[in-house]
Structures are given as structure tokens and as C-alpha cells.
Image (cartoon, rainbow, N blue to C red; front, side, top):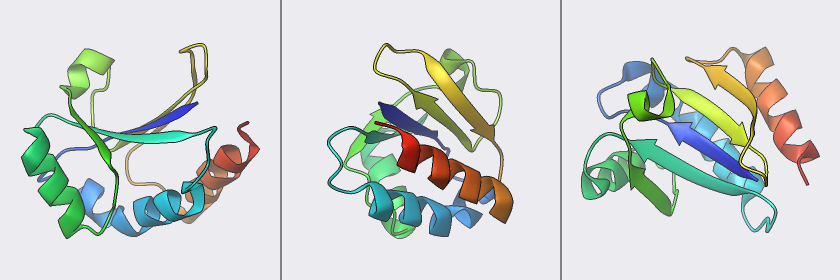
Length: 110
């Protein structure tokens, strides 16, 4: 299972959501059944620096154009199962309710 965070440097909604992404990384750390990957259109080094500035320690950072994933806006969170099928998708800066929904969903993934 993979949680793909589709972000973009300069996206204020992405930056404003950093505390939530920090929580996701913290709560999923050490889980062998769930990977967290950040996909940004910038060069990997720039993306890593951006994430470090937000204090979001994601080790797997990839250069990907959001449009190549069918994503029209950032931030977008995509949950993908072991078969490569998208099971959940959340767009934009999430409300506290939606953040709880994401975390509950991640806890139920196995």
C-alpha cells in the first residue's frame, strides 16, 4: 500500500498542510505495510529541500508532473493498494474532519 502526496513547491495549500503531513509521517513510521511517497514537479533536490523546510521527513521523493497522474491541483493525497488500484483520493487543503478521515483510513490499511 502506498500513500502518494502530490505536492508542489510554492503551493500555499501544500505549505499550510505541513502539520498534517508531519502527523502522517509520524503515525505511519516503521509500518511495513504502507509507504509514503512525495511526488512533486520540481527537481528531487529542490523538492527534498522544500519538504525539509516544512519539517516533513519523507525519504522517497520523486519528480513527477501532477498532470501525468491525472491530478489537476495540489495538494492531492492518493491511497493506492497493493494491486496498484487507487482506493481513496483527497484533494486540496483538508478540513479537520477530512484529516481525521485520512488518518483513520491509513490506520485501517493492512
